[in-house]
Length: 460
Image 1 (tube, rainbow, N blue to C red):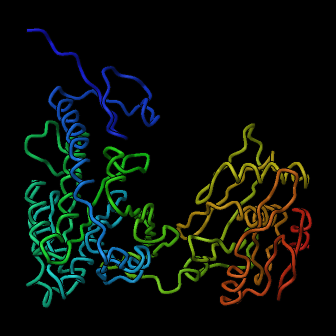
Image 2 (spheres, one colour):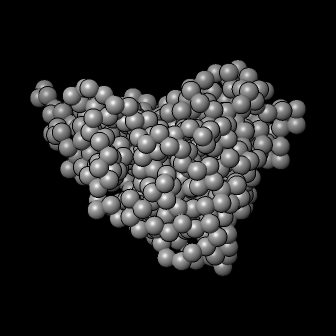
Image 3 (spheres, one colour):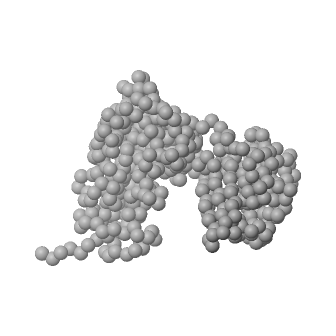
């Protein structure tokens, strides 16, 4: 019997190919094409043909309902920070995918959601990774099970068909799945977490969720946990993110207690919100004053420190940027950056060296954003520059001053958006002066247009 030629598929987008290549021709991902079995290749081909054949049925059955414009009912998760990110709660009939690194607290978050929703509605917790005893122990630790115990059911199952049946039954208002990469579907070739299995299991659960409200009872909401790769992206085919309604990213340092929840995709709300939590002894605790968290232990009298009013979505967070400049005799001075973009820090150092004649080429430079925060916006350039200049001159930045502005290669400064919101948050926490470019003069406003002017205004 002739041997069948090998088949290949992309782990990112799920597309299949006849030969291997280092770059996926469909999505452009590098080193994502892997060899799959003949059965998996046939499964992918059948699923694509089935989707095309079923498209006409979906089109034919679609009808415009009179209440189509009404807002979907939402489930309150019991955590106001999570509800803020979701846009007011988890909509009924929606599928959310929660991703994060191991140990970050995804299962703890699911346990708290289950305990809160189960106080009034039926909840099914499906665990494919842990035993029922492990999940029950976590639930007893993070929430009081006396009242929701009767409405919360646990099952250790990896059968996607059984989970889909529970979703379509209409018995549960919320179904939690931990995790989608460990579910399997009968008749689908491949290992759990493979391209074919991930695609088939996710499509089965999403289809069951969309049809769960067709029998007259409220639709079921589903939250699935997804593993991440070493690069920080969600494991499995890229199709997972396209199938679901909401993609949540749970971030933070596992060795610190601060956690940040972001919505990467949200069909029922904005992606500009974020939620802040602390990992405590009884699970995740909401942060009441996010801005005060990052500057609570700041020592304003130490050189090399500057506060930046940074925008994280629709929130303004005051973040401390620290810098240390140390002369060295090494041929290649060290550059270490934590919490911000190393490329932008390198550009700021080059502007300081070239335009302000600071001899940073003979110094080791260390830049750190405290509290585990991460600065992505270019408007933090001025704060980084002032922290470095303060460390080099050994003069502290005034304790009542914050800085915001983008630094250009010519040493010019560009204004940052949402100035009024940044200034209001800074004044609320006791800062009286805001240094940066822009037109107009407000209370405590120090307007500068060049980086040299900003350094002189802050350090004298």
